[in-house]
Image (tube, rainbow, N blue to C red; front, side, top):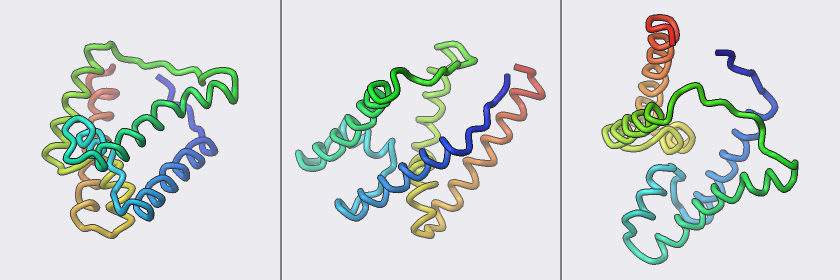
Length: 143
């Protein structure tokens, strides 16, 4: 499996995520952790809370359609695992989010920017675990 290096697209995407996070903090006083946003849509605490969360998720779903409209198609993507493996991975991420008190977007983007010791620790843990998992899967198991 070859991982393509795309520095310009990655920089642009990261910048847009950072901008969206800052705008959400400035306008709503809220942290843009994707799983927390989704949890607030699934189990809303108030109508106002549900509305901004649902709007943010709708924007995440509409953005690829705008990309298709602007460019004529989506970039070619391959997912080198089966659907059951994706489901297992999603389940494991859900467990990690629960025990970690948030996801990589909440801790890594917003928490580190606020110099939160808890978020810095969580992000280091995410990254070390990710590196170890990739190493085991690619070099030990050979998948």
